Length: 253
View 1 (cartoon, rainbow, N blue to C red):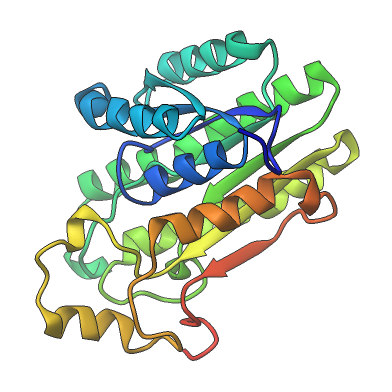
View 2 (cartoon, one colour; view 1 turned 90 degrees about the vertical axis):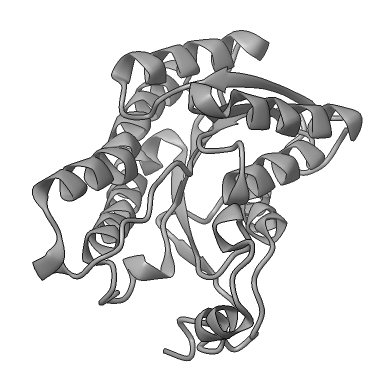
């Protein structure tokens, strides 16, 4: 397959389902050699994504990784680079969405959310920047934040804080990496179709889509299309940006 990512190799975390799956499919459709990464417990779903990519004429492999483990992250980098001898992009998508107001939340929930949602982004970015500098050819990092990273989300304070942090790392990484040709950007999704929303009532779906200018659920592949652009050379002068893929939620709230 050929496209705007032809010849590029990289990985997507949390790619067995949902937004991560949509990103992996779109990157492969644009010619990238994609490592679909997720927890070992999600291997079946991850391999199904690989199968979809291969049947469409793309290239992909599955590599299990727990993003809270530095050893797993190191292994993910090693196996991805070994595919074609280079690494061109990484996508930080893995995350969880704890609910609850600050006054109702406990330390355990906070620690877990920050470990998965934010510390993993720090670790992957650190490893990516080091490797990109070693390779000497630049590279692209894409972090999946959320509209909750730009607003106060009263029903999920910890989640919102972690997504704000991702935007902070995105901006700082862009400043630090620019001189080395390393670009760092973020995508801010809102209501996107996922397993979590399957079987939801029409009333609930209306509640989460009504604040958007485009009042429907987004498709994971629509996030993927934005990701493919930001990781491609067509976005070579874009860094430190946070791109909403939110149906106009931030424009109207």
